Image (cartoon, rainbow, N blue to C red; front, side):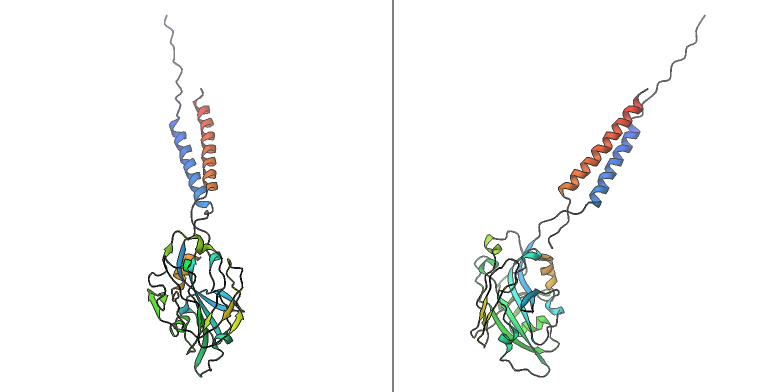
Length: 285
């Protein structure tokens, strides 16, 4: 007599399907972690250019807009400083702060015109390109139409070389270049400022000139002798270089920090560990 036998069904492990799902889930988790994680700090670029300032309450304030977008008032003082500037904390102010009276006190008022003091600081040799010899800092009283913008005020007392809306040089300084990036800032360019003797055209004056530069702790005296006014500044597109350097002329940049990648790794390992346990249980008869 034959005995009918039935073979026990063989249970096949379906490892591939759930494992693929787990891998996809891990990848998605990592992607979301990278997208939602805050950007890490990036190195801020430095630029060599003319910064534009206004004198407010005896201290220099970095201009929020370009000179073609600002209209200085009668009795105000504009400032220009040539320097290598990176993050906003490294902004370099003009190294003297003469008052409006010291610059324009001997200039008679005229109907339909305004008087604006203009301070031009060519910076230090370290601020310029190799071999550059910056002229001495100067100041002059500009007398222009009441509606004149900052760039017109500057052009009334100095020759300006501009390119694509950006003032590259004033009175031929610097001789070349226009707001170029500086990849390696020298140690000399990073040193704190010291105040300078200021030449005020056509007038003698002496005043304390404290610098508001974040890196400068010295105080200066503005001493005048007659002299001409050379100057150079970023033009109406002041923001294109000033914001680019500082921005923001800014200390933050895009990128994924080390902490983010550690978090991604932890998420992936956790998901894979759970998947391995689930897979082992499915394979057991």
